[in-house]
Image 1 (cartoon, rainbow, N blue to C red):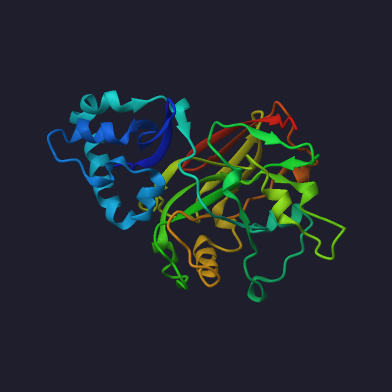
Image 2 (cartoon, one colour):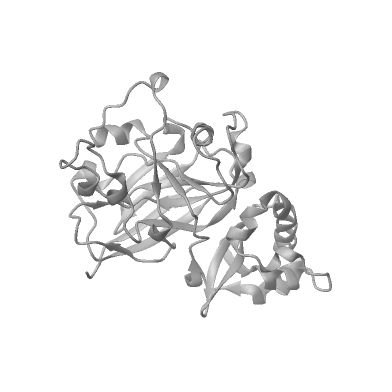
Amino acid sequence: MSFPGFGLASYRRGTLLRTAIVLSGRLFDLRETWHGACAGEAPPAWLEQSVADLLQHWQEVEPPLLRLAERAAAADMRQAVASAARPLNDIAPPFIPARVFCAASNYIEHANEMGTALAAKASSRPYMFLKTASSIIGPNDTVRIPPETKTPDWEVELAAVIGRRTRRVSVEQALDCIAAYTIVNDVSARDLTRRNDYPFKHDWFQGKNHDTFCPIGPWLVPARFVRDPQALRLRLSVNGEWMQDGNTADMIWTVREQVAYLSTIVTLMPGDVIATGTPTGVGMGRGVFLKAGDVMLAQIEGLGEIRNPVEAEIP
């Protein structure tokens, strides 16, 4: 049987944040896994690093991480690494990216449900905006709805994590710059993304960047284990009812094209995240919005799921 792959996660151990390797959906402390699977060998320098630090040197650390994961997953090693297992409810955000680039209206049906008229792709470019680090929360953390919005909404998205310094990369080579993939829920205050008090009609900053408005996780899956990022089913439910059920094959701008486009504007850096857009089924199109007590569950094929309860922020 071929090796199914591994993931990288962060988890809370008391007041500390530690790095975990993910095998078959289970968390194992990275350092303890190495000592269990490689007893007697000199520990590598990267063993104590955070996920964010590992991404900074991804080309160097991915091969030994892969060898460790394969060894730890072997049948004769299961007992040796068993003590490194950690409870899934200890999981934290995989890391806190400094920049999350987000694609707006990147699925035609989603654009239609939002009443957005798009130009033909041949005469257009991706529309990107940023989410701040303060909006990041983990796969079990609570989304807090501020009192300024009455129409908070959900958006499940495939997220690509950059693994090398990237400037003006070609579309053909763009996927080579991706270290891993994960899930993002681009929580959005719909009534705050549009304004009438300025000649500029959209305000993505105040609509997208409230604290807790960017759940991410549950872990990073190295790109080598995602056969085709344009063939992944992605879904989101609210209180057990499926609201979104799409496929990344329906993107207007592919992952490759988004990476290449962004790299003509900024130098993409290891750890940058690109949230690649959401399919149809958001609350705005249904006239249904998030409220205190709701629970969102976002899933992407092969990447796991993130579950986030919702509560009202107390001013």
